[in-house]
Image (cartoon, rainbow, N blue to C red; front, top):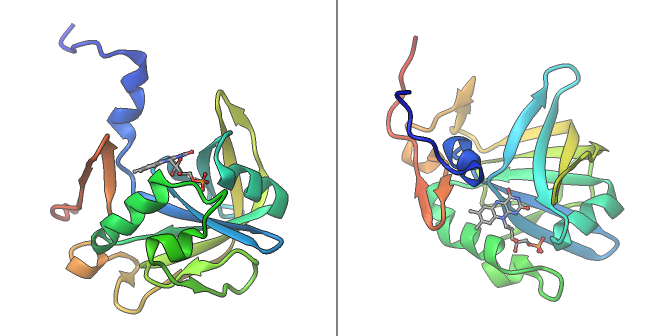
Length: 182
Ligand SMILES: Cc1cc2nc3c(=O)[nH]c(=O)nc-3n(C[C@H](O)[C@H](O)[C@H](O)COP(=O)(O)O)c2cc1C
């Protein structure tokens, strides 16, 4: 065997570093933001995305009640704000004010988008299968937004302003280094 075996708890660390996102949700008057590294595209037709959210998160409650959410993509300049959204609960606090982010009205959903982010995906909750202590919140994509200049056919991560954050685990993140094209 040419591999070193790792504990099963480390599986996520091999594939953890897709872009870290900020998930927004709203139910009645309460809007919230939470950081999520466990996020992925899930279907082409219809377009769907998915994010894995812990059962104890306040966002879990809000998404099930509001039946919608948005996935917002921060750039590396939002490191502190992203950390704030991922280490504080919105149950008793307004995280937009607490973490210094600006709510922006979306087109299809009540949950706000985040003005400082590179882009955002508005979603209607399609299903929420249970995965252990998390729910996979599967969202049907209703609208997709990107800031001018950061998206041409793909995210232009080679531009500093469009550099996404990728969670390696613990307090470590990486940003895209270089583009390789086949
Ligand atoms: C970098 C980072 C990535 C995270 N990824 C996830 C994730 O994918 N799913 C999840 O349920 N929680 C994740 N968390 C934890 C939540 O963001 C955190 O528990 C947050 O306080 C929940 O907020 P809420 O209770 O207001 O919903 C992450 C936290 C950090 C800092």
